[in-house]
Length: 379
Ligand SMILES: *Cc1c(COP(=O)(O)O)cnc(C)c1O
Image (cartoon, rainbow, N blue to C red; front, side, top):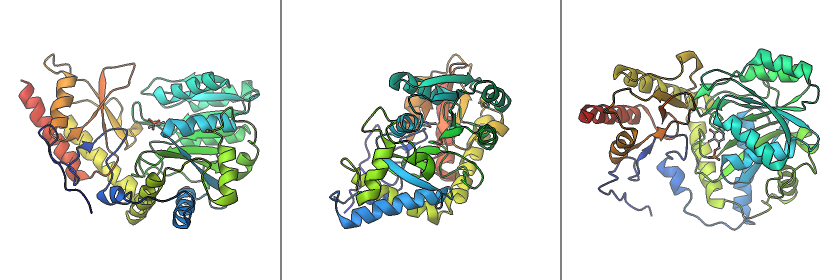
């Protein structure tokens, strides 16, 4: 039933389906079985589909131990759609959001607030510096208008891990609500409702959970979500309406991404087989370790010290050698089957290599070998 890989001159066989390995922040490499799960057409009212959808939602809540307190609201679109949905649904028109920013995804939340007209302020640290918990504490003490705080768990701009538990403690102590963008961390870095108090966390199908792209989801505290009726400035992005509607008949309000849900269900099977967050996190950590060790051996420097590095994506400084041209480097690597990613930093010239998706030690070593031969041939 599957098509054989179709290698081409510019795209030699790398993954089992003949695709390049994606060492990027997304879209990411998926397993052949995840891709295969999509070879079915389901109607939106099909009983099997409705059951699978319900099961996916339950499993996502269980990943953060939220069965007793939280619900899962899935949403069509890329990750940013559900970030915007979370902000618009949870922050009421008379609320005020404090956004902890140390990269592009924090700035994106501020941009969303401008579009949808939500009061917001940002508290910014440099891209290579974690968000500042003492400053947050002080700000929340001074400004009683702040109703919500938003934080990025792993800032994919640099790959830095933010101190989520400390942020959540301070926010809870001040009696405010926490909104988390855990897009690039969910499923690989532990996050439990038993330890971290939050109103909503958002992530997507295609990052550490290794499903296909096409949908995001919000894990929301049930009580907090119940209080959001009428907040959203958008129909499509109203998580309250999406939730109430899905609870009533098990169906999506608008055409569901059926294939993405089938793939996601399979991806969650594989996630569980790998040992859940612990197993997945371990593989990514090993990918990250091999990558950094190999790159340092070739003389590359990481932006972040090891203690701030999340095992998700690694930012490397651009080599100073004038013979090094990133576009040429990128093209040579992708012609060998490895796709890396340009940097997104404002502070330094850089590029990024991801550790997530259906990749293991062998693929990272393959990428390192391709980088080594490319560097040698630059001379
Ligand atoms: C990937 C990502 C997003 C969403 O990006 P999309 O391109 O819309 O899927 C949001 N926040 C973070 C931290 C991310 O890594």
